[in-house]
Length: 392
Image 1 (cartoon, rainbow, N blue to C red):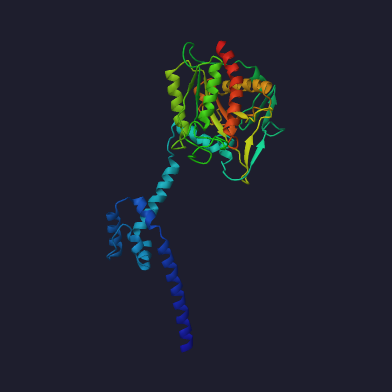
Image 2 (tube, rainbow, N blue to C red):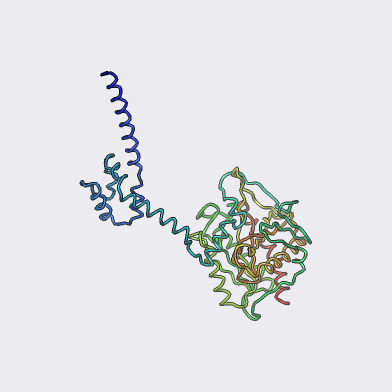
């Protein structure tokens, strides 16, 4: 009998020990610090409430939680204070789900761009590792590719397109005639840069990015400006870095700038947002675009166009018609210079004018000189198209 009683006591003692261990683990891992964050920053209030719960002296200092014993933490884990904090958190989550915050138009634009990816750059992370491979990116069969009349286009949207009809469409340009700039060049992501090579060495602000405007896409915009002006066009080049020091919100900031420039100079008819792409494989391989033109090594260019899939954009068909006209001329003059037009669901601020284009010049695998060669040829061709439109 005594042995049986001893065995029963031993089993009960073991079970009690297991229960105490489990409770101690719960207490040690309870979200006390999270409760502090939710209930406010008043340390004196929080610790006063806890003393009333425990009925004993608690340690003082900047982080008294670290000075508590296991039993004290166990007790705190069961307090009504933390229970109330958890209930407050749950209620707050339900309220947030029931009443989402309203977004400004700029925030909605940014969210749409981030959701779908601005272009291949957003879908393919910039990588500083791996070898560099050369690619000439052209349209292929099937998928979302459309090709007609010297135009190739990849449609990422729900829009149904007739490329031949768009190629024949009249391109509207709404702006005042007179003295003043006709073209605005700017850079929503101005710090985007290229693979360092030769004398084109810069200090990185991030991977393949620099604030030095002699080596990032602002320098590419300078090249375009020179070519346009040599053709007799008047150009305003906004060299502001809208993506530095903060990347998020760049489209909202550049939208405000575009609106300001249009108000100040109502003669502006064409807005070019100049970027560079980023292409990387899952194995870390970095890709550089290459136009097969002979002579100097030259990157490819890509026109990115927005639609009204997500947000109001009454001008998108006119912008696309302009892009198609330029693409036709590029194909005739410099085959393989232009990648297929990329049609996206976001707007990229192109709703602000009837002549807005996002131009990707090369990728992060290209060198600056390859990008400048591409910018020169693009501007020569696009400039001729702009002259024809402005004279009509």
